[in-house]
Length: 113
Length: 118
Image 1 (tube, helix red, strand yellow):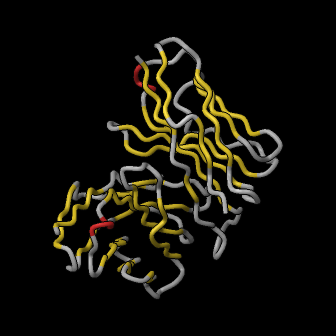
Image 2 (cartoon, chains in turn blue, purple):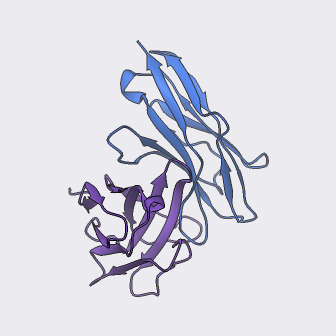
């Protein structure tokens, strides 16, 4: 079975600074996808970024980028130029052949003005 | 365009009652998923529908839980004889279908239904 681990329950960052959220996973599959989702208090899970395991290039979406280390099974999210609106819970998630998402426990990110 | 719609937004009911939660996926999405989010267990997969295939029910926690998807669109999650441990946020997601390299499509989530069992 696949597992996703987010070991940090909380992080804080100063507005305009950079923060990195950590995630590790375990799988025996060779083809899989990794995601970061953001969940603000409104409850809706919003897709932040997606990484295909077969691609070596790290995914980037504007201020969000990942550091995907396949051999180490590590998938961290870097948020640059942090904004107050980035404050939320962030979930790392995995999906493979069975299509269903396996989530980490999540991390609460706060942004200090 | 319209996103995934879930109703009701909040539901409070007494222990032992049955509840029905509704999910209306994004038009054209053939895959539909139900997840449960609770403080103790985090986010858990419940059930997955894809087209006309038999659903993957491997995440349903007990036989009190069931779900159906009519006409390949709207889905209803039913919880019978509710227990206090059923209190959680129930999230629905939908996606285009794809599998394997280049295939798996991102899941788009609704706002969830917060279920409280008294």
